[in-house]
Length: 81
Length: 253
Image 1 (tube, rainbow over the protein chains, first blue to last red):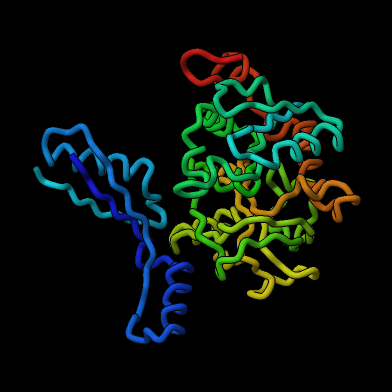
Image 2: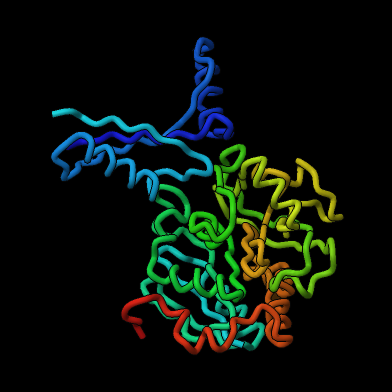
């Protein structure tokens, strides 16, 4: 099964890259882009026979390695079969 | 005394640290590959600078799982002096041996220059020989040195006097202009609650001889030699001999 993990900086953490990107967009004329937060996206191929197992496996690896809980949070989507 | 310099794939200041300990200070120093599980009777451990595992995912995020880190954690828990320099500091943060995390530098620039830091605490094994508020001139070279921690954790760091170095100007004045990366409270280095684990972004090992532009970093190595001679921050011999510092399972030689 496939799971997608989206890791983003917590709202309270300043994102220097997102700030630079939004500044660049403003200078390109996209004043309507009010804010950008940059994150990371992972696609996991999992040997799991149910979406519950896939979700718990994805959550375990996100906790252990993919995200740093001090500064980041994550969201998981499991592709249903 | 004997230093262990841990070598991760991508470490690039390991030889500088080894040189400072062995050639400049005249102490014993050994390289320890990250796959090893034995610190070989080290009295102090250095996690050097560099780009372990290419800085992939997050700086230090993968190195923290290296087999040698179990031995480093046990050494630290037993009170032994551990110094993390730059990437070594980032690894200590990811490993949870020090609190907080690193963000991209404010301004996103990789900063490679000499800076000044002010010594805030002199009761750690690596600042013992410093004067309170002594200003040290040392190089930095990092893209992710923007130290961050939560307000609660920051309060704890202050209460426990764990902020060891702050970025400052040559006169020792802490200011936003003297902060090269946006670190919260101008933090350049911190120590553990037990004070034996110290991490900092500047490179003392690259500032140990005047021919390198500064010898201000030498005092940090002299500090730990002095601590060792005085029997401070020493790992109990019984612990070391019992093999407790060797990670469980087979120890490589």
